[in-house]
Length: 157
Picture 1 (cartoon, one colour):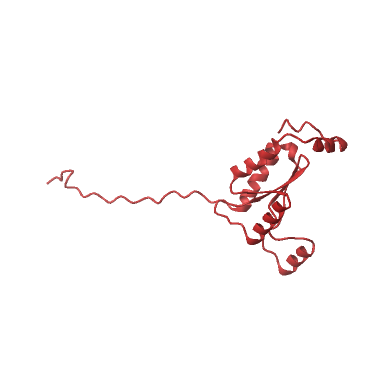
Picture 2 (picture 1 turned 135 degrees about the horizontal axis):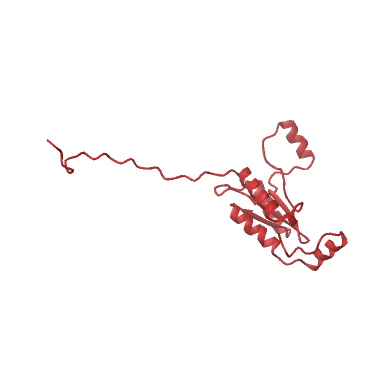
């Protein structure tokens, strides 16, 4: 006896787990941001740099670094451009600022220092573009001419 299609037992379909996007570490984000700036904006080389302030250290090495000026909470990037100094702390989408980072950012902002927090590659690019696309100041241009640096910085990359 043949079974009709209504008589066939239907197998329960497996529920597929939602696709989880791969997570990116803060170190990977930092490398991606730096390499993008280095490759896309060669004129900014030597003006953007990472401040190495993370990682586990031995007690002895940590003490030596603290004695030499290592301060916990300093932002990840320093960008010297157009006569001004800018800082950017990178965090992953779920990353949180430490208490030391909050204190430094608040203190520096109170002092008039330009500090931002970027929680993605896109936010870093937005921060970066807001700096390099800003017109040069006469002060910055005067400095550049005194040290024989090209002054055509408006035509990036």
